[in-house]
Image 1 (cartoon, helix red, strand yellow):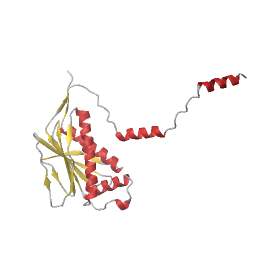
Image 2 (tube, rainbow, N blue to C red; image 1 turned 135 degrees about the vertical axis):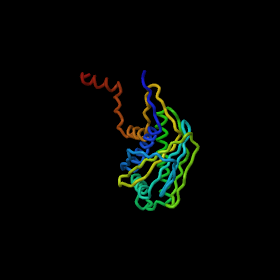
Image 3 (cartoon, helix red, strand yellow; image 1 turned 90 degrees about the vertical axis):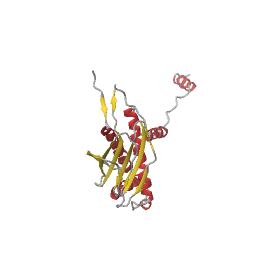
Image 4 (cartoon, rainbow, N blue to C red; image 1 turned 45 degrees about the vertical axis):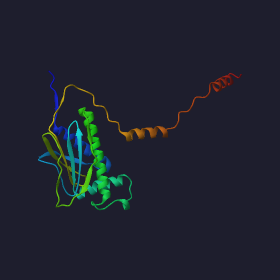
Length: 227
């Protein structure tokens, strides 16, 4: 009898970490990595200097929290803005700026969106997210975020930027297991940017030269015969 494969909370955490590294690395143009060690924690919290949380529900319930130090947030934000071609004069230089919070919130939205897509493809279940809540937090204030979950499990992972700045990602979710009963193909995710680029390249490619009319071919043939 074939042994069934079981996917646990920690496997889902790895998927979340992959979404963070892929989205932030692409956005900033620099490599973002995460630790091979994970911490078990009792609850998720918003911590200084910039914290963000997103609730999700559906196939399972949970919360994703990201806690950036000011240097880590500014590095990701600045690299992203430069990667987008923004002039230096329009880039904020303080992590308390609304622009920094807005950009980091949008990146968080993309990350969790990528995560929910991976869950749908890999686990054949669906989860939906709410709008990320991003805020700058005073160093003396710590906010705990609670959500209703069935036997919640919480984890924290350390991430490192190119310049060795640190930020943390916390995941709390229902204690659950997904058991793979039989093999199935994971549908390849469609990247909208690739589709747009492919269509643009097709439009730029030179048009195929049309074949000459049949009458012109006949006239050329008769001319070669001297008729």
